[in-house]
Image (cartoon, rainbow, N blue to C red; front, top):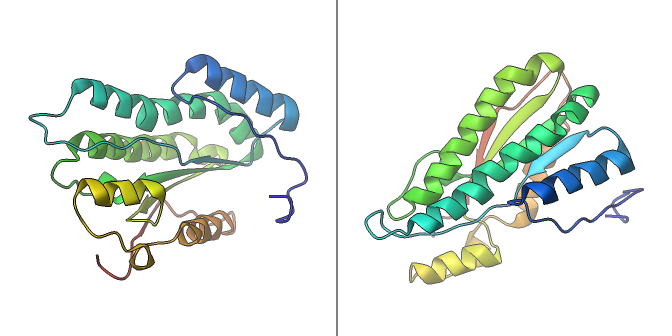
Amino acid sequence: MRTAGARDILAVPTDLTDDNDLERLSGLVSDRFGDIDILVHSAGAYARAPLETAAIAELDALYAANLRAPYRLTQHCLPALCRRAGDILFINSTQGLAASAAVGQFAATQHALKALADSLRDEINAAGVRVTTLHVGSTATPRQERIFAMTDRHYAPDRLLQPDDIASAAVAVLRLPRTAEVTNLTIRPMLKT
């Protein structure tokens, strides 16, 4: 980050599903930096199972990590974002647009995350805060490699999106003039697996 020009870096290991950790994180950021220009939600959990056999504990864990955590973190950070007329970027899955078989519990949290972003946008656009959802398809990450293994598919990372592709899309959205807002953007691999 320093080689990219960051002047001040603060790394805070945080359990995003723990309200005390979220409060501590937002307090540390506020104390160190004051207001917030950009909030990116990119953490989350994944599970797959047919609805008939999916464990309710798995659904609860996905809800806690994928929806409740960004909801609460946004609540903590919203005053600081509004003061700066900042940006909120939700990194979502394409499963948040159209769910596939055996991922209903995961997809439900992604659909809910999109609804959260859409509602929030309507609430805070007047304060100058932009809210974008970036729906991301299969990306060459360790998690995606595990997903391919779970589904007995050959993992060919060169045929997937690369993490830099996602970063480039996010930066492009954030660099737009303040007269423009991308509300939803879908990015997927050009080559099909």
